[in-house]
Each structure stands twice: as C-alpha cells, then as structure tokens.
Length: 432
Image 1: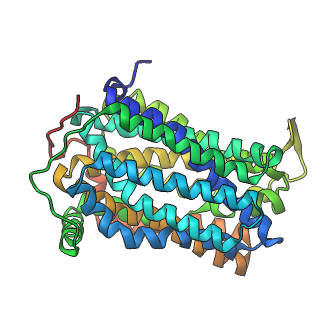
Image 2: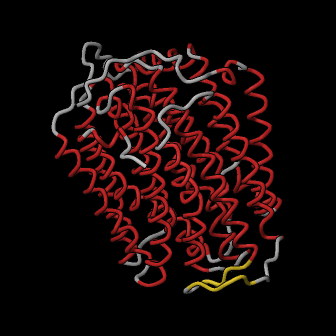
Image 3: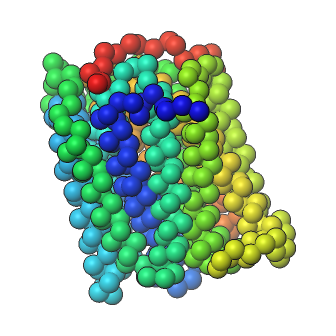
C-alpha cells in the first residue's frame, strides 16, 4: 500500500477532500428524493419516480451547450464557487419547504432542475480543472481517486439518508446536503489561484459549443466510450426503482433502502481502491468493454433477486432483517458498482489525455450529455417499462439491453478493443 500519487499534489488533495463530504451530502439528498416521491404518491408509481430523471436531464442538455464554452473561457475555479453556492441554496429551499409542509412533487422536480442547471456548468469546470492540478502521468490515478471520492460519498450518503429519514425526518437530509457544499467552497479557497490555458478563449456562443461536438466526433476512441456509457446507463438504470424494490417487493423499510442505495458505491470504492494501487493500466480498451459487460450482467442478477429466497432470513441487523433475496440484490448492485468504477476511470482517462486543455471544458460538457443523459433518460424508460410490465421486468430487460448495446458498438468501432492506454496526446500541465 502507498499514498496514491494524485494525493501528493496539495491542490488536488484539497479538492478531493471537499468532494468526499459534498458528494456524501448530494447522495443523501438523491436517495431521499426518491423515497420522498414514493411517500408523496401514496402508492407505487414508477412514472413519478422516472419523472425525477427528466427533471435532471433537460437542464443538462440545454445548459451544457453553455457550460463547456464557459469552462474554456472563464476561470474554472470561480465557476465552481458560483455553482456550488446555487446548489447549496436549492438544497436549503428543499429543506425549508419540507419542514413547513409545503413541499410537492412538482416543487421537487423544479428545485432538482435548478440544481441540474448548476451542475451543467459545474461538471465541465470541475473535470477540466483536475488536469490543471496534477501532471499527465498522475491523471489516471487522479480519476481513480475521484471515483473513490464519488463512491465513498455515495456509500455514506444513502446509508445516512435512511437513518436520518427514520429518526429525524425527511427535511434534514436536504439541510445536511446544503451544508455539505461548504466543504468544496472551503477547498476552492484553500487551493488558491490555478493556472489554465487562456491563449484560446472561445467565448460563449453556439459556434464554440459546436466545436466541442466536432472534436468529439473526430476522435473515435472518445466518441465510442461516450456512446457505450450512454447505452449502458440508459438501459441499466437499476437504482431508479429502488424505493419500490425496497418498500414494496423486499419490504425492508428505510434502513434497508439506505443500504441498497449504497450497495453500488460500496462495490465502486472497493474497485477504485484496488485500481489506485496500480501504477499503469494496460489493455484499457478490453478492460473497459469487459467492465461494462459485467455491469449489464450484474443488473440482470439484481432484477432476479426478488425470486431468490425472499422469506429466508439469514441474519438480523439493527432495524433490518437480512433475507437471501436482499443479500442477492445487494451483491448484484455492488458488482454493478465495481464494474462501473472500472469503466468510469478508464473512459475519463481516455478522454482527458486525448483532449487539449483549451477544449477540455467543451469535451466534458458533451460527455455530460451522454454521462447524465443515459441514466436520467433511463429513469424515464425504466418507469414506463415498469408501469407496463412490472419493476423486475424493467430491471432485467435493461441489463439485457446494455449487453446488446455494448456488443453492437464494439463491432462498429473495433479499435476500442485494441486501445492499450499509451496512445494519447501529451498535454502540458500546470500542476504543482
């Protein structure tokens, strides 16, 4: 074991530490939102749960055309100050409305859309900032550590969400999230000024956004990974139906829901921790394809969990009787999370190392449409399929769709299989 190279860079360490706390708060809110909507509907309503995905993706699609050029034109650190503040205020509004008993599903959708609009600017600025904080040689490790931060927060957040809802009430999950954004704001203050390539300032206009799309489509290795990411998450959005799986199928209540919500992230942290100890990843293309394939298979396993010993109690935890069906569901989600962590680290490394600094923001903004569009539109798709054929059928068919999509895309772009990991454009870094 050794200290991951990326954490030896002071400014990246600040950002990483702040993200762990902030992501925990955001994931607490995300899990709470789904549970809140299920409670407000009074009965299982997959379409209402799917609607939250639509509320998130529409602002991303609209504002990502501006977020990318903004990250390449203006100071990325200052953009993050603004976006983190907006998202904190939206979370605070959710808390106040819930405490006062004035919250509705439509207000949840609206405030979720406000946060998503801010995220459309935050994502490109934050991801494009990371190569300015570490040298190119440590970038794969930085994305491995970012994956650990993301998934550590995604373990802590949902587990705490279930506990907080059961003990303090729904509104406190949103309040805690509002305060968690202060961790990233403090990190941005502590890191000080960060240099970036300002020689080419594209401005915020449609031509600058189009240039980002042209760049993506000209790079087959980048475009193919984005397309696989979109297809896999569109079909295999298993977590969308978790409130119904936990409450109405497995009947495990808030505590069990919290653990199921954290399962993918537990698998992701384990996989990310292993990869953080690997100095160099080879045969990245084959590893990426294998990881997404495992992701689809794990989703199918999760979909079949309800048929495997639902009445067989294995052991009892505080507030939760663990059945065989619950354990299989948990393991399926954890395996999906581990596979997703591997694919995320590889595809982020491929994109950043093959993109010059002056267009990184726009590359990330296009990727954001694929990365968030897949799971958010997938929530809508899962809601429709679940309302027609049932929740298990929606999950299982999604895993099958993921496998078919990966196979077709790999056949279309066979160069992805041959990608090793050292065929990248070396981009100067200002890391210190």
